[in-house]
Length: 355
Image (cartoon, rainbow, N blue to C red; front, side, top):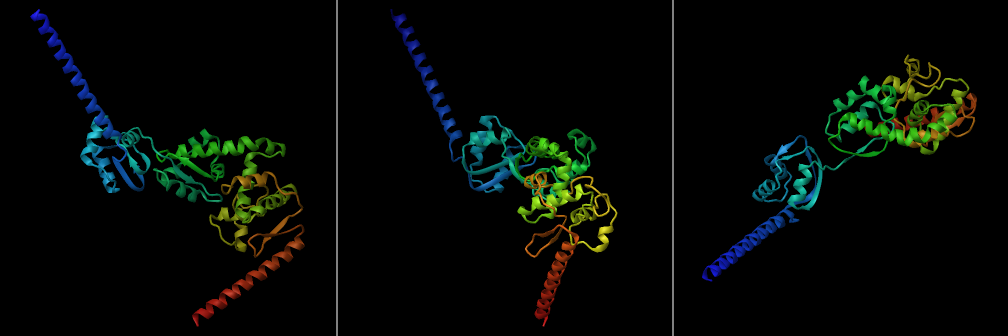
C-alpha cells in the first residue's frame, strides 16, 4: 500500500514537472513572439527608400539602418535575426515608413519582397535621353541599357530593328522592380506597346493598307511637330495628304533627327544627305525618329480629313495651315515678320539694359 502511494506521488510530481515545463516554455515562446511582433521594434521617422545593391549580412544591414537614423535596439535586433534564422538580406528597393515588427521587416528583406519604382517614359525623347532617364531610376547604369539598343541578338529575339525599338518605348509610367535587368525593362515596355498598340490597332491600320511600323514612323514625326494636342490629327492628315500625292514629306523633324540635334534649321541643313532627310528622300523615313505617345499614334491612325498640304508656325505656339503654296507663302511671310519684330524687341531690351 505504501509502495502504491509512493509511486502515485512520484507520478503526480512528474506530471506537475511536465506541466510546469510546458507552461514555462509557453511563457518563453509567447514572450519571444510578443517581442518579434511588437509593432515599434523599428521606427522610420521619415519615408525611407532602402536600396540594397547586393546581398548583405546582419552587420551590414545594421550599418545601413544606422546611416538612415532608424530607431531600433541593436542587441535585440541581432537576437531577432538569430531567432528567425535570417543571416542574409537580398538586393532590392524597400520603401519603408512608420513602425515595423521584427518579423515583418526581417522577412521582407530576407525574402527580397521589394517595392517597385516608378519609371516615367516621356514622349518625343531621344535614345540617349531615354537611356539616361530610365537608368537613373534603376539599379543598372546607362551603359548597360544603351548596349541593349545595339544588341543584334536581342533585337532579333524581340523582332524589331534598332530603328523601331525607340519608337516602341511607349510613353507612360510603369512600376518596375529596381533590380530588373535592362533587357527585362525593355521587354516590359515592349509588352505594353504590344498590348496597347499592336493588339488594339493592327486591324485598323491594315484596313487602311498600312502597317503598325508605318503608323509608328509617321506618328514619331507628328510627335515632334505638334506642340498642341488638338493639332495632332490635323498635322497627321497633312502629312498623309503629301504621301498620297507622292509629294516629299519635307518634315523638319526628320532633318533634326538626321543632324542629331533639335534646333532652328538653316538653309544648308535641308541639303544634308541622310536617309532620314525627307526633303531629299520620298516617302517615310526608315523608322521612327522618337517615341510617340498613344494619343499621337491614334491621331496618326485617324487623321483629320482636309486638303491641307502646307503649314508654318504661328505666334500662339501652333501652326497655320494652307491648301496651296501661294497661301503658304503669305502665311510664311507673316511668321517671318513676327519673328523679326521679336528680335527687334529683344535687341531693344538688351540695349536698354546695357545703357
